[in-house]
Length: 309
Image (tube, rainbow, N blue to C red; front, side):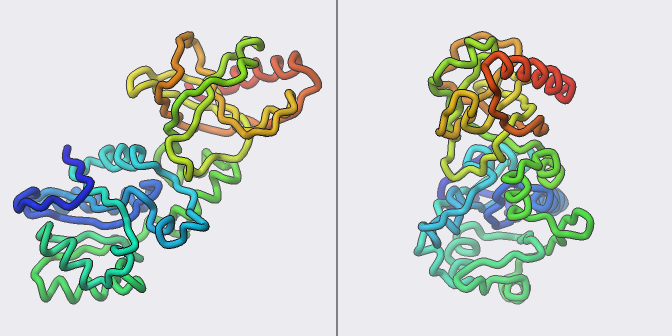
């Protein structure tokens, strides 16, 4: 596994590299089709498959006043790419200088001169460079001029509609997490650090870990209760249920993310959790008393356990 924060200067870092370029936010089913094609093309050529992507979403640099909500943080994106069998990742910090490069300049300075690609794999709508002038027609002409191969990957559709990051963001924000998982072709996940909460869950018999997302720009699902699996420090995996919202029974106003980990009793303050979302159980509700809330939590746990089998 090789993960670079900049394009390697030394020649021969990769053997006959087969490259794909993109933001890959979400690493969804459509992205996975590109990565699978990359892997196959590289294997056929006995070459190294390489993904060139970005740590920060380009739109955050281009439009800082309205940054996009992202589906994958840096570590989530790396994990998802590795799971597709690609072990060479160049993750650049996108910059305004990079945004001002026209496609021919980017192709020469960043790709041909430094990486020396043998083959390029791109998505059906891929374009890069200032004014997005680096489309497939441009790359096809450059491939003839500079002697590298090129493969165009058609979209992965769901009921005739191309799967996209924008579509998935909308489904997650609407609480349609199980459908978003279909479009992702994996479970939607959230990495976060455990911080101290108010301790109300413990008093109810359902202690919770309060989570601060790893990336503040991360898309957070619609308020409600979710069936989840929790990975603690990349090792322990447990079932659980998670609440997103303001805890209206206690007249709170701050939006929080709290997970109750089943059959688990350990101090994990400051530790990192990976939350994998399976399904949405219900809306967040204001109960007349903590006792009524506890009764509902018992029902929620039973339903979550049935879903997580």
